[in-house]
Amino acid sequence: MTRKIIIIGAHAAGLDAASAARKTDRSAEITLITKEKKTAYSRCGLPFVLGGHIATFDDLEVFPERFYKMMKLNLLTETTATKIDAKAKTVDIQDKTGNKETLSYDNLVITTGADPFVPPIKGRDKKGIFVVRTIEDGEKINKAIETAESAVIIGAGLIGLEVAVACLERGLKTTVVEFLPYVLPVLLDKAMADRVQKMLEEKGMKIIVGKGAEEILGTDKVSGVLVAGEEIPADVVVVATGVRANVELSKNAGVELGEKRAIKTNLRMETNIKGIYTAGDCAETINLVTRRPTMSQLGTTAVKQAKVAGINAAGGYSTFSGALGSWITRLFDTEIGGTGLTEFMAGRAGIETVSGTIVSKTRADYFPGALPIRIKLIAEKETTKIIGAQIIGGEEVTQRINALSFAIQNEMTVKELAKAETCYAPPVCETWEPMVLAAEMVIRKLR
Image (cartoon, rainbow, N blue to C red; front, side):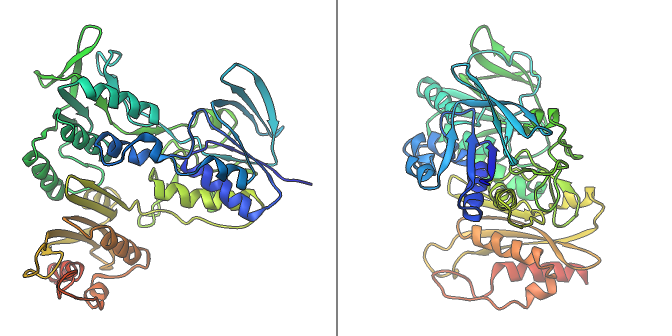
């Protein structure tokens, strides 16, 4: 009998789950359901279209229409899944015209993602206030920027800073407001974050930290934002204060949520209900260092989870052990990335740490174009295992973050990293690899 697989959600996680399911079961009937008109586009690319680095929002679409035909996927766009009946193994759907239908499944994959969180700021219902999640959101912001002179971005996480850079690149007077004490507060420790803030301020961005947006000003349309009694003019306000897992449909079906209020899973990405799997921003996972539940909500984590969910939904066997939350971005000409725990997050988890920071160059100091790079390594004091890293540099940050991610996953100690053999040539790297120098700094502190 042909296996029926329904996947709710058709973006990064949904499409990777469908692809993995198809490769596992060539004859399965696979249906994808999404509320949006466009599918499987890069949400992470939205700020870079706004900044003019990518020509159009259409360029963010990952899979052409022929992909769905080639993979024999039944794609239902502008269609909402309204109810899951886990006992009957059915999903109720409704399309944009109001037509309703009930679909049956053998296995179900939930990739409903997350929705933007907008804090209860007074005046948040005015025109000119935007979130950044969909292509439609991006198009609205892009149109508003065309006639705007000033912008306020509420939230200094990755998306917030990337959108702020885009606004500045488009010629807007740009202010970032962050309630927490420093920028990228979940991803960097303060000293590293302060370096990022200084760089952005030197480019002309105004950044206010440790203060929240009290009110969005204006009558019908936004005219400014009130922060600590100061009125900051704004034609455009973008709220980038994070996302919350979209779990209502799952919860109503009896799917269990974890301590992070996202869908709880086992190693096979299966929920408490047999035959129902999940992946992506709506799914809880395990932090590979603390072994505690966490929310990664990164595209890289989503597609790995989705591959596992898709394989298992199609009758195969695969597991996902957890995530480190490795991330990277580029703000103007500076690359910033991290992996594992920050010192702050390690402290919250009860882990005593020792850290070391070094500043080096990306090439031989005498070679033209050598750029500065700053590396911070964090080790667990008792075991000397590397548990986190943060890097700010002009180039070559990504592969160093990747290498340190491998090191953490393989439980490498700082002593082992200090002895690692690395390559050298004047145009591409210093004689002493900066990661090795950072490890030696930690070792000196441990002594």
